[in-house]
Amino acid sequence: MKRFLIATLILLLTTGLAFAKAYEVNRKAGEYAVAIKMDKNPPSVGINNMEIAVTDKGGKALKDAKVVVEYGMPAMPGMPAMNYKTDAKPDGDKYKASLNVSMGGPWFVNVKITTGGKTVSTKFTFDVS
Ligand SMILES: [Cu+2]
Figure 1 (tube, rainbow, N blue to C red):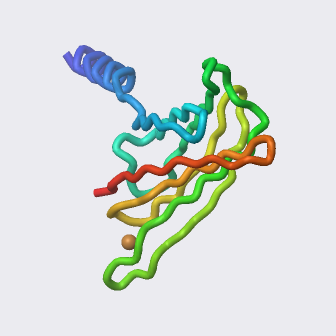
Figure 2: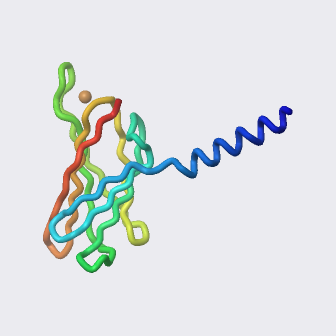
Figure 3: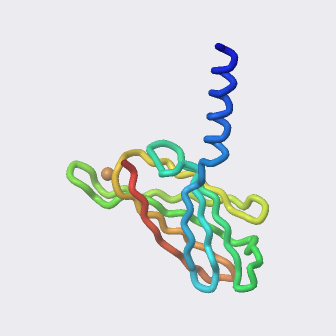
């Protein structure tokens, strides 16, 4: 009986993981499509890993771009505005960054993509409860 319970528990845990979806945001930045995934869904306090896929009009991955993620929180009572910046590192066809979310509340993200001397960007926000 105990073994059956453990097996059921493992099954529930693994199917739960298989269905856990990343937090996804799809945006346009200039002529590029930007698909952003965050490993925590919903994003929460702590390290949130972000994967950024940038594709051109033809659906081809944009490589060798400089991708910077600016993020932070507007000022709130008892807390001045917080602004952070991190470089997203190329990883295969995508870029990866880690965001350190220090508290609950509204966070903004600005993804800046520089290629061929030109910078385009896209913004989104997420709430941390
Ligand atoms: Cu705050």
